[in-house]
Image (cartoon, rainbow, N blue to C red):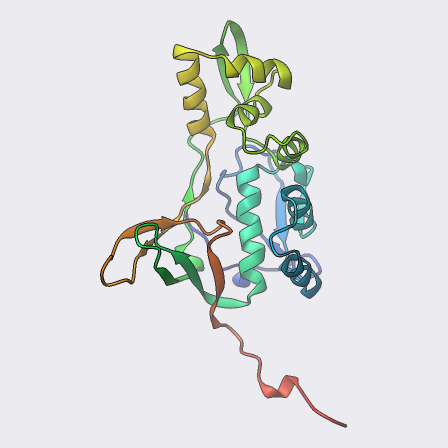
Length: 254
């Protein structure tokens, strides 16, 4: 589950240009057997809505809007892992551009030079989830058989209501089978082996799209650095359109 195929080659079986997803960073191990996930490119109205928001849209509202273009059969779409959701959100974004190749504009962390890096669908690679099976079960802080699952979209939205979506302790608490408040207080005060175990669980549950390696084009620098495609600071635009718009689509007068 480490490679990606151009979704434009997929067979659409749902209306509204829905595209079936065959691969996910989680490998699908967090989901029931037989589920199907489809997404569609952003509509003109959605693009305008996000553009007019100019980064001022809340994380919760943005997440809810992106979810509207995702269809899941066999489970609630809110049960998607948050990292899978971020990946699907990127697919929606790339598909909207109707391009074969893309241009990634990102600043070098060493010299701040803005780099333009070309990539295609074939460059997308996954950091697969390390846990071979789920849930992860462990004893922590004197409590036996605590179960851990990857953070879901629904759980992420719950954390945004608590203003805790960037709090690693809150995220760990949501991922556990314990009552949230009990888990938060327990994990916050973990020491020694318990703290190390929590770190290990975080690594085992991690899964995401691998960053793309960029070489700084500044001749005085040349540093290589990873660039995350889902980073808001990284601007993605079409590099070569698969089908260019020609004058035949536009007429003037009568």
